[in-house]
Amino acid sequence: MSIPHKHHSPGFLTLVNDAKSRVKQIDIEQYKNMPANSHVLIDVREDNEFAAGHAAGAVHLGKGVIERDIESAIPDKNTTLVLYCGGGYRSALAADALQKMGYANAISLDGGWRAWNAAGLPIEK
Image (cartoon, rainbow, N blue to C red; front, side):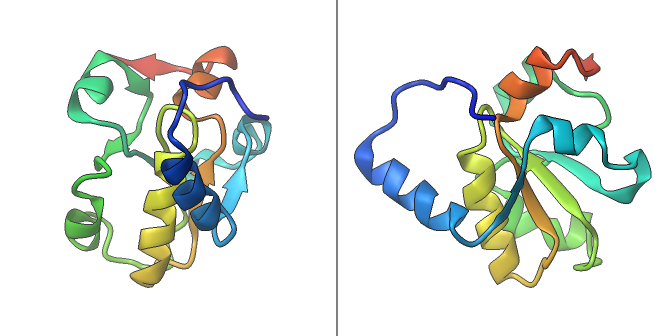
């Protein structure tokens, strides 16, 4: 389920599509069927986006720092990580990087924050 997004440059979309060819993606319906204790939900958006509102229970590791901080925040590389951003682009890039770091179960939530809100899932501010 792709949620409409803002216009992105062709170069960015090429980079994202390349990452998406390697990472597992799930949509919001698949996410809703995951047991709550089976994964860590990670918000990779910017600090101001997270502060304005985020998925209930999400850990914040912004895309700009996730590679630097993930090993201390979540040292078990077998942990299932579900990453989300605004629409599923930055989360795909982050999941790709985490896979390269040995996190075999990094998943990108297609539709991201927009899909989360459209589904009426719980949020925190």
